[in-house]
Amino acid sequence: MNKVNVGIIGCGNISGIYFKNLKEFDAVHVAACADLDLERAKSRAEEYGIPKGCTVDELLADPKLELIVNLTIPAAHSQVCLQALEAGKHVYVEKPLAVTREEGQAILSKSKEKGLLVGSAPDTFLGGGIQTCIKLIEDGWIGTPVAATAFMMSRGHENWHPDPEFYYAKGGGPMFDMGPYYLTALVAMLGPIKRVAGMAKISFPERMITSSKKYGQMIQVETPTHVSGVLDFHSGVVGTMVTSFEVFGGSQLPLIEIYGSQGTLSVPDPNGFGGPVLLRRHDSSDWKEIPLSHGYAANSRGVGVLDMVYAVKNNRINRANGELAYHVLEAMHAFHDSSEQDQYYFMKSTCERPQPMPHNLPFGVLD
Image: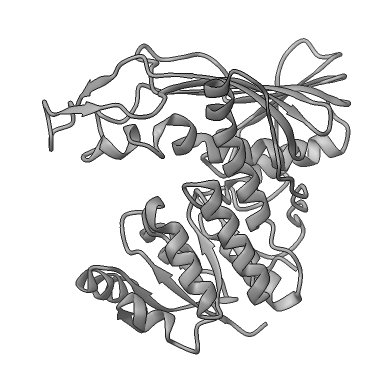
């Protein structure tokens, strides 16, 4: 298969793993990178052997580039995605798809108008860990799924992150920070969500930064830092989900568990690509670790871009697609809306459960 020329916009910290991994895929050629800081773009280009470090406008005007990887900050996701689509290029964006539902809808609308694909992180659900879970569910190892739990319990970012203010501003919080990983994994395993009942609160209206760069500065908290709720899936599964920045003493709760008529599945960290995957069936007295059935178990960020490249070439739907990302975006807002309005939130969007990854093809080959 001929290589697809890819351009990366946004050369911050997260870009390093994308540059590294995309260079390992034979189907992908990272031909250019851009950043608001031109010197940073040139530095990244030199570091990873990319032919061109340039401005955003120069990159978008390059006719050789077919696909843009958007690694900008969340507030810029929508603008850059729309610019890329307007320039006639497919676009893959870091999570979340956009900050607001209106921005997400605009991206999907523009992609349909232009006949172009949209993809979005997280692509961790394409890794060996969650793909093994999907295969176990589909092969009937836990019987019929009936319930699920998901817990992201954390003390927040002010004790380690050099610039933690964003995580407590509008558009931040535990749901919008880590919710995409958990919700995407749940939808990949169980299908789309029908309705949400949520409760959300701000327990501490001020937080003190204790990381070294801004030690002692105070943060005014503008978004819920503890979000709890129930998810009703179209498949009939009822899920319980909690995301929190208010757990200061640690937690022993599982990350994700799926409960079926014949057993329970312990799902690995949805922010990673590997295991362990643990299974306990109705006739077993203990948990059993299941060998991973699929590859991409290391830090494989960028495999969603690779899948999108194959989708472009083979005229199919990419797995980490825009409809899935928008469904997750709406679900995150649904927790907040349900809490504020004191009622169920009925989802307006839906999506197809992504096709499972192949498990019998060489590394870097997806079709």
